[in-house]
Amino acid sequence: MDIKNALNAFAALSQETRLRIFKILIEYGKEGVAAGEISKRLNIPHNTLSFHLSHLSHAGLVSSKRQGRSIIYVAHFEVIDNLIAFLMKNCCLKNKGGCS
Image 1 (cartoon, rainbow, N blue to C red):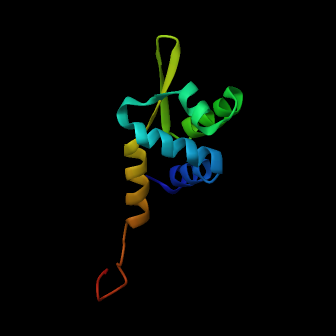
Image 2 (cartoon, one colour; image 1 turned 90 degrees about the horizontal axis):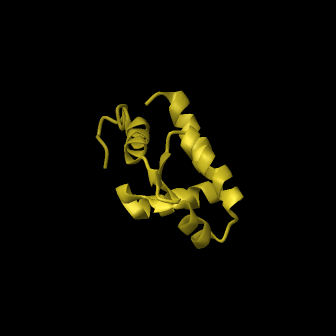
Image 3 (cartoon, rainbow, N blue to C red; image 1 turned 135 degrees about the vertical axis):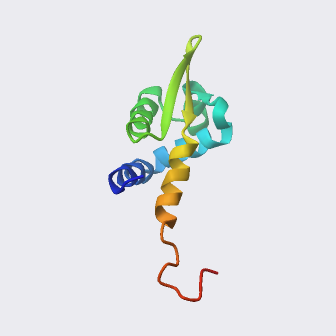
């Protein structure tokens, strides 16, 4: 992951509603969850949810797929893994005693 992608991910997650949405998506794992369920759990209108999901999608953090009449959203776990790896790169490189 490069710094531009990391900044996009952090920018998307730095808003409370988007972070709450992402945490819900993580709960559902690779199966994902319908937008209506997210809307219900957060008690936010569908258009507001759509706005926030769009930000998360543009940052590469989520994707969607149609399932019948519902749109299912799924968190991209590999992007979060890459973001954590980006943060941890060179961890304790300058600490001669190692990391604790």
